[in-house]
Length: 165
Image 1 (tube, rainbow, N blue to C red):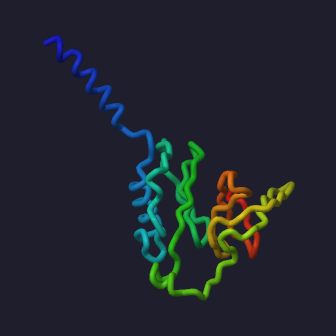
Image 2: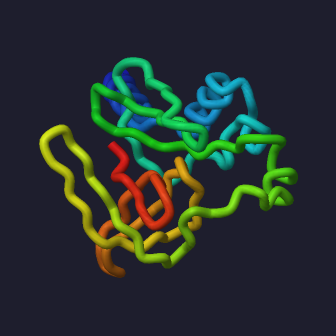
Image 3: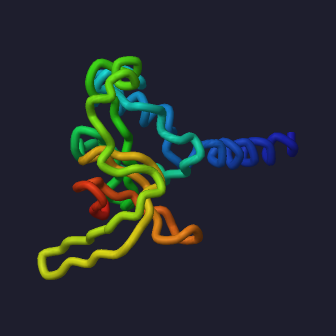
């Protein structure tokens, strides 16, 4: 009988550790699909699932969704301060988007750009390099040098991006 007294507390400790303290990205994908009323890869849906390697702390309240522009939906947890931009398929879906070359890129990969940070009392600009192609309104990764941190910026014109807020 003394062995059972130790077994129950140990089992409860292991059960508490099994509950993940991170958001389930599959669940976030399903929530994005419901929010957009379109599955991943469909017209109006997410281009790809949220990266499974992301370790986002579980949001204590509901996750918020907001459309940033025509190319992305922002999934965020205001309580913890994290946010993820989910790129969208607009138009007729993947096949039509790949075949449609009418929309030319305003920014090309490895192109030098001006990154502009605009605030009510000041604005700053500095040189960065595009890491992907992008159309006006798209969010693309940029960096100032090979060893610098990648920043997400919105393409605001030919050769210019704005820092994502």
